Length: 273
Image 1 (cartoon, rainbow, N blue to C red):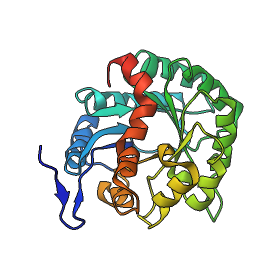
Image 2: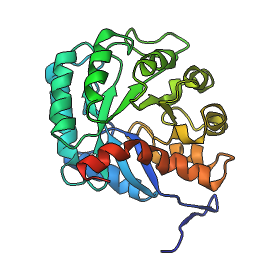
Image 3: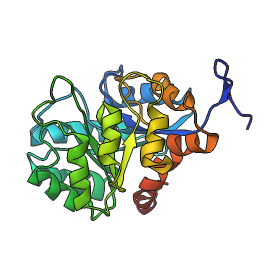
């Protein structure tokens, strides 16, 4: 197959897995319609697979019924595209028992390959440890939103330091530091010594230097691409990687191979690789 190129960069289009997508922000009356829109636009830019989590609308502090409703939306969205889309189960440390039931339903008995933790409660809480301990039986990934806001985080919003503390308790579990903490210069150093934490590129503007610095601080095998679509565009977030002063092999690792490697055990177990 001929190698495609972006004319404005004279850069080959590399195969990518987008590790951070949402149904929220995408047009469509149903989860299926929203997923169709998401995949159509992803394919234009060489994105082979997307990982979707959380339904719509976003709820900062979901109760068990809302967790189930939003996970049902994602399950519906995945139904026709298991070769192109994967999902993480939305859980909340405030409700560990309900979250464990959702993990059993969506990960153990369903097609999902990890969990998403957001801002209901910080990931240093006892409930988070219960949830992660349960997930560890199935080999899934833990995706934790992290941020460092100049104006102060939300009460339940985790920092990269929080995630590092959690990850040290479960060295056999792979964690993804969502947004690299927003203030990535600080976030990268917070997780640097925690080898089972990968940092992702999603969210915020495509600032120069982020991806190169991530490789310098945590290494080329611990950086993964994500966009935060439909809240952010695929192109602006891909630009961080394509525009980085890295070699082609490093870009391939970040765009697909690192995420693919960390997911490989559970994908093979489910026959989704």
